[in-house]
Length: 323
Image 1 (tube, rainbow, N blue to C red):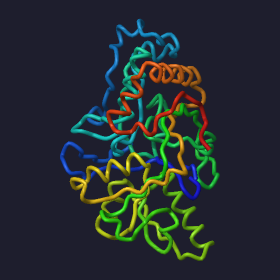
Image 2 (tube, rainbow, N blue to C red; image 1 turned 30 degrees about the horizontal axis):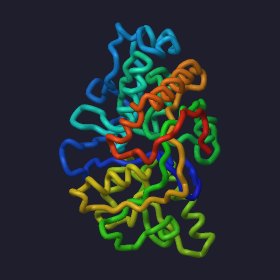
Image 3 (tube, rainbow, N blue to C red; image 1 turned 180 degrees about the vertical axis):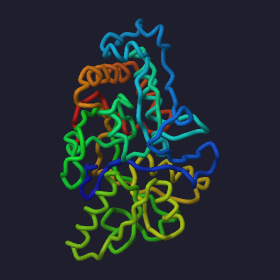
């Protein structure tokens, strides 16, 4: 992502952030799952049963394979509250609730399975999943199958853009270092989740700090955002970079609201997209129609309002609108 980004690359995000091990209650245990999947790691968003799905308004827009299966298989990293996270064995959050609304329009179930974030796109060409819905920032590099250095890493994807978020800077309660922007991180150490656009955003900011003569920005990368949060809480890093709704949620819930504060950088808003294999244009177009229908009927807004994420609402579906 550029000098600032959004989660799980770049608006100036990639994804990132779990209440995880630092969450207050056992209801928010966000144990990261490996790429191997099983029934214990999956959740089906509520929607009409497969046998009755032909009565749904947009069922005919789906590929026949999905019509026959009655299920859309969704890859996610369920460690990113409030966007997607686990309550017991159930995957809940903004994305599953939006998916349930989409499922009502399409007449199929969205079956979520959790894996590590940096493996999710690789599950599309293999058919393990039909789409990825995991607070993933729509970037041109991801559309073209490139890594942050421009190297080809696999097949590109199409994104159906459904949410907007800016960079959130998660700091210790009281903000002892008075961090108000990314530039305030120069000369300090930060923690980020590996494989996210925020990791690249941190590298971009480190280059900017050096060019501006403001000191080195040290970066520690972790497999999960929960580990990055723990590093900040322990004082080993001054901040963790996240998407704004995620940082705000962590600040509100972790330690009963006593562990962290969130600083939003609203000037770098970027789009989250549902990722689909570029060859699967029929599914992509069906999702566009379904998202527009949920925006029109209010179920999309209800899903965001439930989790306090209304600031990220989009007014219509778009395809590959990320930068």
